[in-house]
Length: 239
Ligand SMILES: [Zn+2]
Image 1 (cartoon, rainbow, N blue to C red):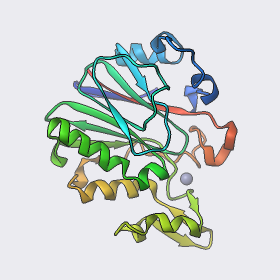
Image 2: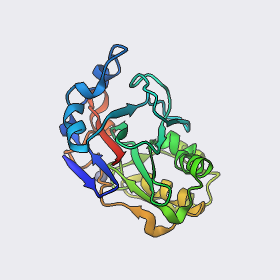
Image 3: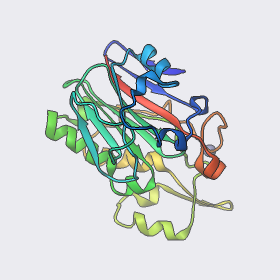
Image 4: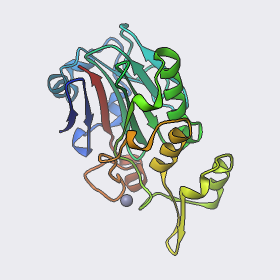
């Protein structure tokens, strides 16, 4: 269990050891207390959570703000979560998509985004940051942004059709690589450059946990394992 922890917040970066089968968690019956189930029970203890929230991830650019209400896990559609509530875990499930965790150290607020290529084209990281800005007055210089495990430029192959999605981005040539092995995409850099463009400084980004899910077999990868791929979770909570 890889836990990034400091006095104010903690982030859990999961791996294939989470052993999460999407078919099983998506079919949880209503009314279930997520924190009473394995493997969330272990997480609750380690992160001292009172609540834990996951959305029904739909590769969108939409998300929700979490207050004290409880909502059914995996049933509300969306791809980012924001809160100022303490002991409230915000989680995403991934297998190649990029988990992005935001911490505003002035307003003591957190967010998490599920950024696959579709959501990234929809600028989900920017929209998450802008919603924090509206809610709390969050500024780039107060943010720390952690990137979790995802498909990276060493392995993330794309074809020519993909390029049209990038046309409207001024930095598209920085995130595409061509060589004898074909064409590859830098998903983390694509999100990072979007955030830099709206004023998040370079030193805000913590990339240490951004390990490639495709070539590192400790992680779940849809591109490597197809439909049989399990999921890892990334969870952030204020203390
Ligand atoms: Zn790789």
